Image (cartoon, rainbow, N blue to C red; front, side, top):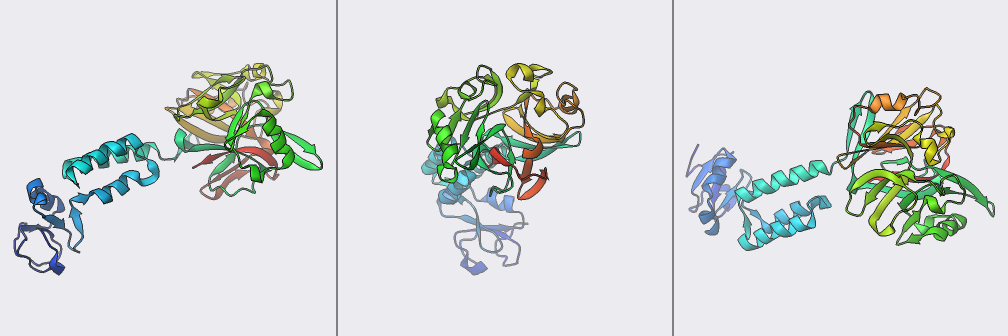
Length: 352
């Protein structure tokens, strides 16, 4: 309904001034339909100072540069180069018009969904789908339930040690993870620094392991690169500058195909395949999928028990990470699953 003089409630009004909702001589029209009011507020009229006011007097069109920039920068979802691109448009036009705004909203929604962590279900298994840029690996060396993160789970395998009466853990195979030196015991930090600690990150590779179990082996390892590309491949060592995070595990799926005894060739032994709760990391479309399965067979890999449950998920690669007494999974502050022992663990996966 088009109405030039109406002061009734519920109208979107095209005018220069709100004037407390009373009649204003600058008013061109009023509609109950917001989009129709916006269509009447042409670019020429915007340049003349016209705006669309909602029934409460809030300006709903045009959107100012300041307001739209805040939307673009929300959560850092829009990449910096795209922020610069759109800000260049805004700086030239000063005001965002309808066509630009629709493009931005569609693009923002697409990227927001792409960067969203989701819980998906498959064959009764709940899987946490995490974009690579929101997945963090932290070395903690603490009891598994004594951590502050809202969403985390135990991750890589480790070995236990004691020195000067202090119990501590060190990773096995490959691990690149964030750490806080102030929270680690002196013997733990000492041995980590014998490998490499730089800029609050530890670089610990199979080639540097104290034992011979993985020292000369190429081990299946999930890699997150600095550009947030994620994949699983076999490594004995890594080039520090390329790697953001890394954690090793026993192969379940390699290049889309079922793995059987390959884990033994990599240095893993049969202690990791017993019936218990196991954690897993899968890769698909540059997402990381974390999930856990409580297995029943004596060997969850060679029996095909795990593979049969996930074979049609479309994963390119899957590794098994630590479980058993180390297992712990908390999502959004709620414990999803934990074994009874509050074991001291070495590293965790965190959803940021």
